[in-house]
Length: 614
Picture 1 (tube, rainbow, N blue to C red):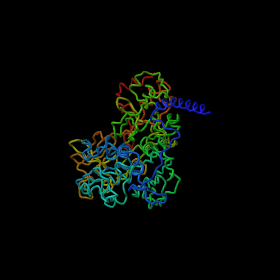
Picture 2 (cartoon, helix red, strand yellow; picture 1 turned 180 degrees about the vertical axis):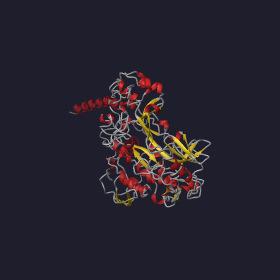
Picture 3 (spheres, rainbow, N blue to C red; picture 1 turned 120 degrees about the vertical axis):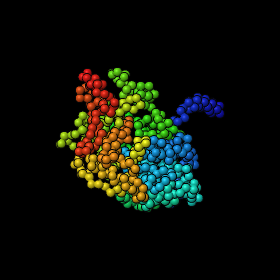
Picture 4 (cartoon, one colour; picture 1 turned 60 degrees about the vertical axis):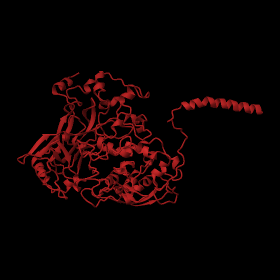
């Protein structure tokens, strides 16, 4: 009997020795289907473990950072958005961009884009006078933190100090010896007013929240309501569902939290005692979409659904194309407007990588009957994004100080050759992208038309946008509604002239609003000439702001060219002759369009050859 038992163990041992090499050959990143996160001990900001009946918010840095390298993880560009580079070095700077000096970094934290409903300019770290200040870092956390995972600029100032150290009860500006009044991280001024303030000692800092990505059912809206009311330190606890909120509404009818009570016994979202069983290693699409939907829908008109994207229909998710690394940087492509961490451009597989170079063996090999010249000259997205089925923001008119936003449905129709729908036709949601040259290829884009006042530097020919709070306070000349939509617009030369004269005045701090006031609109710069008339000059900054289109890939049966050469190369080509909005209203209130071939740099002689019947 003993011999049989020994023989059995010898056989089992041999089997185990055979299995070990196979285990060692498995990729180290392959997760076990039955493994779970180790037990998580929630900790407060002082590192003390919390109890189920605790009433203070937990600290992600002390909780998750007990095992994970918090400093390394928060170097990721989602956390920093231009504040630091890949090594963690602070690069946001008052002298970051010599060409456009109002841009203080390459990311959302510091880079100004007028293609937003409410463009905000991050105040410089050191400002010569209060007229220079638009929005502080505190404002960014409060109003932009809803689409930010915490950490980075919501935790540390531009010199690397905590905005407020809970342990030592000291502000970062006190360590640096800076003047908080004109310090863009601590100034109480926003929109020219002091009522905003920057009470970092009461709000606390907003630490990087790991559950934003790694917890299903995360409460985004509730967390946003807490940030809006400056409960920064409570943000992660609210997002996990461990609070009871007393809500009201702000001026824009958005819910805000007036009071927050911590309750760790709540289990609707996260379970205090079993959080380790709820952690997901691979972020689900809905977590990515909670932030990116707002940007994607507004700017590019996309939605991530089975009906609108062939990759989604085939079971792929966000991280299939955008996997992350140990520093929590997600692989990215190369788009026109996004410039944060350009060193990581093209770290994700391109269309050609998967469908031509076979880096993903599961991807079908493309079979195109036309000349290879098309593949070299035209991006895959150009044909496989034939149209958009959701409206997107097209025009941002900032001239009144209260931005007017107009969607694609106002100026584009379901007929790419005729933007004016029939009178009995309801305004469509479908619209067709414009095209432009980018990195040697023709790519599809959603143009955004920004109309705004600026201050011209004649030496550099650069126009510095004027903050909206100065326009809002301006004594405005009377305007007419020339296009009949019920909203007066600045479009006639008389209206433009009256505004330019008014902009020679001073702001509330008795400083000039603009030395050389100009209007940026529809491809042109408008300014006063020596005789007080209005001159109109073509200007680069007045061109449309083009956003890359890469998602909502349609399958071959829906792509441009599926019906052969005549899909594009025909007398009435919807490809070359489609209309693209240039100016929403000319001097008489009429929209101005150009055709796609003009934007692609094609001359008329070449166009005539391209449009020959095939």
